[in-house]
Length: 83
Image (cartoon, rainbow, N blue to C red; front, side):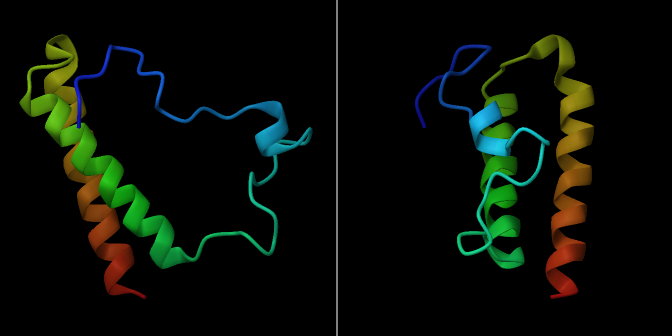
């Protein structure tokens, strides 16, 4: 993946039209991803974060972000085992 600025423009953000006025799910019932798809996406996002940390990004928050990355990895693993 190419280098990203501190506030990457390709990181999805919620908008009012994505999540609805009441802050509900951004997906319609027919297009809602499965649990396995959500876990796969979380795994990809975790790897992206890990690559960014390894490349030296956000050095002032590296320890905290690395701890969160490890916890996210454990959560994903536990959720995957329960599927």
